[in-house]
Image 1: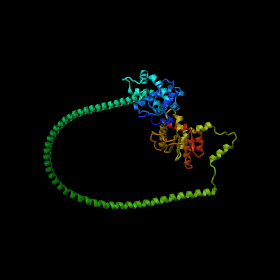
Image 2: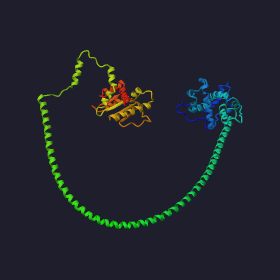
Image 3: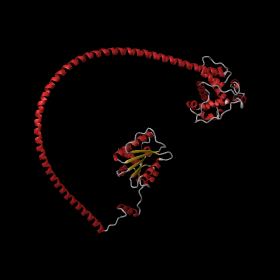
Image 4: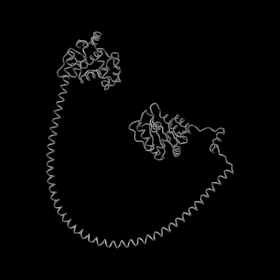
Length: 484
């Protein structure tokens, strides 16, 4: 196949180099420009404009590997611009990711190929010298010889590559033949094993047939015994039928007596039901009298309360008692507001969290990573999420409240455990933070519903407080989880 491959999107694209007759052979131009180079010239490359030979895949890979190995040893000014990024790759990635760019540069830049060839031949030693002379030892690896011949390009280098391709194909054919022989031997072994198994199974079947014949004889004897038992049973059945007829006559007489007694019992039951109906009517009348008395008492109390409110002339109030206490403290001079430390202690108190969660239809919103990195940041993010979600599942089960935990993330993570009942797990979308998602959740709630937001981020706390939510610090939830 050709040396070049489809380019990698992660590497810079090469500028195509013309190889047609209008521009000449790039090898000839480079040789004329660098006549003092020690590598073989393009005299052995063939006619100008002759296309590159089709290389066997092992040869192409070996050429790329040799070039990638010597690429970091070249001076920075001798490395082509498209390969300078490839030269910085790790050794195991250089030949794999930079193969397209290396192959294209070897084909389009003869001067670069000569520089690479000089170092490759120096490392190859005697084998490289033999290839430059146009000969190769018979015991040498044909792939190595073809790779060195492609780089050095001595006279007859195309024949060396063709011979290498033939040797590679011969080795592949030999491997195929060896595989076929091995498969044939395996099939013969399996056939021999199957014949042995068949003989064993045949012996088992013969033993089983003898056992079945013996069991058949026993069954025949048992059948004769069963037939004798059946005849005796039929005789006993006839005697039982005669006794049954006698007993039926006795039962008919007893049934007549029972019917007479049942009619007498029904008559007594009708009398009892009549008496019970009269008793129920009397009880219903008594309950009606009690209900009337109770209604009259409640009506009297209600009318009395209305009359008392009218007599005292009480107007609706605008302030509650707590408002008057707050105004009194505000008018006293020297009264300092609560310090930030005191407010922090209030927001980090787990008892305050329990009070808020005890409100009806409360909604707990948790800033996920803000809590996990404060409480157990030494764990991985996956373990942090799993531990927090599991703890929130326990709180949801105990309180019955709605729980929502929000994490930063452009898309939902894979491998998350199933969320416990009552816990909603949300990830912010691309271009949106978890703080913005929390504020949107708070704004979506109806006015008057208790919403508790757990986050130690001051901006989040101030933002949700403006929308009527109760902000609490992350420590309050961590202490509550530790207590559980």
